[in-house]
Length: 406
Ligand SMILES: Cc1cc2nc3c(=O)[nH]c(=O)nc-3n(C[C@H](O)[C@H](O)[C@H](O)COP(=O)(O)OP(=O)(O)OC[C@H]3O[C@@H](n4cnc5c(N)ncnc54)[C@H](O)[C@@H]3O)c2cc1C
Image (cartoon, rainbow, N blue to C red; front, top):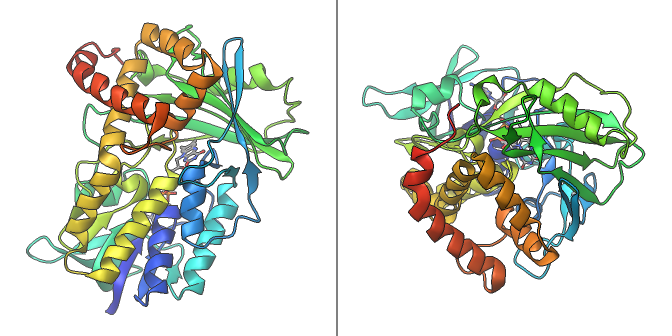
């Protein structure tokens, strides 16, 4: 039997952030990853200014990432190129950083800080007779730990054991992506097309993206919310093909460099802590329903639990749930309500017309959707967020009752 202060299951951004932050403060950390070193994660690779700030806080240099100055929003024939907001509390730029490289940098930082990473090893939580998590079983051994962290991504075996599956009836997302060569790989704007339709002509709440990676390639993908009519039958490969045909001329796209791959985006969790354990990142349902972003939430939740554990291991899980809730719950709840709203084709169409109607409004849309505003943000974006919170809360029962049937 081995003993560590913290056992982390999963070496994605969330698990690595726990390991970096805790090990730097002297905690003995072991991370288990069932994939092999250099593993990839299906992702758009986009980092908002909020995510860049989280990487800065972790002390990760972004030299290997492609800097992004803003977003080009496309809705039918309307196109708006918007700079990331500056002057706020987040970095003035975003980035695109292919996950194979981003995650490798994060794991290297965790190892430099003294964390141990065990590859190609599935870990499962171990319980005592009272149901407290006392560590993990991995590689035929028991590893006890004062804290076990589920950083396992979208729900699987560990979520089942801990009861962290998504809340039934709450929205979630599905997305698909691949890479292709493009002479525009070094563009400084990411691009999002907000007016996707499925093969039956139903408007899709979600978007198609072109994220230039600066290394000769672009990440091309589409994502959709489960609140749309016909979601269960939605064919992501077909949607990806039709989006590709829309952009391939403008971007002079080469052939796909790999077969497009899809994965889930969890947007809620039934629990995210318990005696001896917490869940972070996707395992805690921390994906922004308004833009599908989860890397930042993984990094922030990972750093939060590490700081709390370093301060007081005994109270860390409960404190974590409380403080995480204060930071994200209201925004994510508004996001989930928003996803019910845009599941209605009419609301989606008129909402989009409004959202990209003028540069000023599109700028606010960008800030609100990127979670670059909060309850204290002054000015128009802060006001819009507060009004959206209240209006969507009032409309929630109606939105749920009339949700587009899947
Ligand atoms: C197509 C697509 C596009 C996306 N685009 C973006 C984007 O542009 N920007 C953004 O911010 N977010 C994006 N997301 C979301 C983002 O990918 C996730 O939010 C992010 O990866 C979450 O990080 P994580 O560390 O929580 O989980 P993950 O990155 O999923 O890592 C979890 C790790 O745990 C390991 N694991 C699981 N169970 C076990 C076990 N029992 N034992 C050992 N190891 C285990 C897995 O192998 C995996 O490596 C996208 C998602 C998809 C599907």
